[in-house]
Each structure stands twice: as structure tokens, then as C-alpha cells.
Length: 134
Image 1 (cartoon, one colour):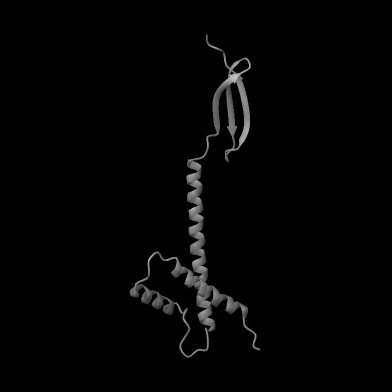
Image 2 (tube, rainbow, N blue to C red; image 1 turned 120 degrees about the horizontal axis):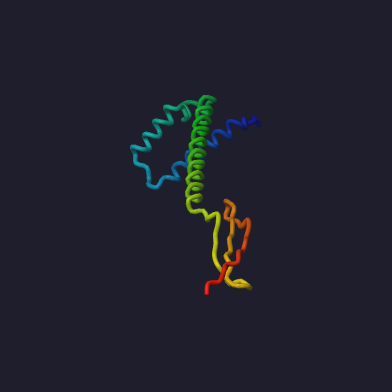
């Protein structure tokens, strides 16, 4: 039995999954013109099997691998941008660093001061007796 080059098999499988995944993500079906444009792009980039070949040549597999690397970089960049935007929105709505309120204490009203860390977790609680106003 002939041994299959695992690198080529992985690259071909990854290319097929990526291409199938990119079509599945589409919100609307592609038009004929869009399908033809993608086919022309893949052909121009050398990602399609050539007629008369028993399978994908090393040039085709290399082109698919480059395409996959590019797509991976694009997806990673989008993910990092989304994470950055999420962090900015979270920081804008973060809990205050200090919170204070009054409550009744054993000797009269007390001011309670709570300090928090950047994650909204309590760091310290202090109480201060307030003078009663008659």
C-alpha cells in the first residue's frame, strides 16, 4: 500500500474545510457571478486541481496552504480586534474603584467606604463614625 504524505493530506483537508466553512458563514446564498468570481480567484491563485492530473500537485497544495495561512491570519486579526473592543466596552462600564454608603452603627450613623480592584473585587472595607446632628 502506498504511503500518503500526511502534510499534503492535512493541507488538502484544511483547504476543503476552510472553503466549505467560508461558504457556510454566508448570510445569503452566493450569486452566480460571485461563485464565478471565487472560482476565477482560486484558479488564478493556483488552488484548483489541474485537468489531467491524478490529484493535487505540490504547487496546488502549496497554494492552498498559503491561502489557509492568510485566512488564519485574517480570522485571528478579527478575533483580536473583537477582544480589544470588548475589553474597551467592559472598561467603560467597569465598577467604580470606590463605593461609599451610610448605615446605622452601634454609636450612631457610620460611613462605609469600600475600595475595589480593577476586576470589581473588594480590596478593603473601612467604617468611619459620623457625628449625629440633632
